[in-house]
Length: 291
Length: 87
Image (cartoon, rainbow over the protein chains, first blue to last red):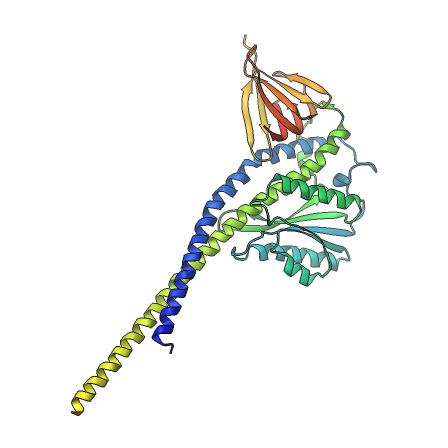
């Protein structure tokens, strides 16, 4: 049985932990609102981009000169897994879930005899990938010095990916991120980004413009990197919103757990205090009777 | 008869900047500026870094928005400009 003083200190320490988790929860809630708004604001651009992309994709025939972003390299040998995680912890299993999804895919690809490389965005996924797949991290894109990843970061990542495929470093790229469903549910998602997966159904319904300036090829050359950027940007925004959601939920749980712990510790504390008093009384009474 | 208005949308990756019905928009295309009225033939063009002119009504003083890079698409639903950034 712990002494009264130990119990008291323990309660004080749990209380201060609870204060921290409570504060973190409120910060996450405020950030979540902002992140959600940003994700929603970006939706029109992404959907317009998709429309334009599909209407264009059905006009342009794929041949040897097509951009690698559209047509791929013609091989399926090396797969690049772009894993987007957050830079901060305290958000439950959010990062672990994304990394797990990536690991399952990586193991599947390796079992099929493909090469697997990683491109890490954000800090939190690196240690585990480094341990499990040593030497397979191609690059780490550092986002820890920006507050929330924005379009400029997405642009830089897209440029990186374009350069890497031109250098022949990989053939297919998949993007992993946490899709935001609600503050409680974040879904780890995999999406193929290079080469672009064009849905057959969407092509048929869009007529496409009649005229192109300067011409289809040049527009496509401009559009492809931009489309890639948009996809990554959307993933980053979703990731950010998911991170805050997960963090809010995790901190809410932690606060509740701390509360329960405080309650049970307080009961133990009071019981032992009463026991001590009772013992003391018995001693006094016994002493008095002996006289 | 009053001419039908052109539905004009200006979007950047961060947000939807404009979505309104206007009389005419002059788009700074890579191959030269072009004005878009309602019922314009469908066209798609890249946009250079320059000013976009928006005429709310015929003969009105145009409103200027400078756009940086992007695309303009005209189809039966109107004009959509996807810009990298606006200022």
